[in-house]
Length: 246
Image (cartoon, rainbow, N blue to C red):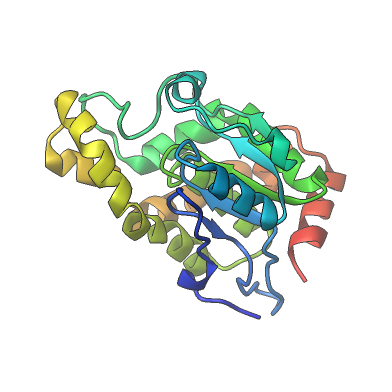
């Protein structure tokens, strides 16, 4: 069954921007499976929320945040619920919207190009987990928009989902992050950010993902080319396609 973007959302107590990547039509007329789940940070999860996550079949969580972010906003203990938490930092500094400096912002397309290079180890870890995990996999950063958005785009592109759908999936974050912006705004103001810039950092604009997909193809040939360049082997890539498309 092909789903709309909004029908993928999962309700967890308390987490934002949580949605699976199943039900997207591919160019071959097949559909993606709902095993992968993308999300903002899980540090707000109550015990009920962790139990609900386990009930969905999630057995591995991959945290793309830095060590600084994990220490400041730790994820609740998940091992008692049968969930493994894997740290795979894309950057070593605080790369959340709250942690960004007040320097001139180069735009998300430029940031995403840097993520693909500096986050190679993180994305290799994530896609290895996606290929090998026995259950569903949730991957997240702080907002679930940028580091997570790149991971989702790479996966959907690998599964041959059309660009328009990938861009729509990315853009959905902006609306779902409204509650998080309200939560973070006081801290952002304390760091000298204007409300306008804070709002900009929580956006997910179509041109940024369009440019990122073009960059991947220009520099790596395809998402498969990128994943191969960072160390995934052909067997893992074949497994990802077989596991997440039917």
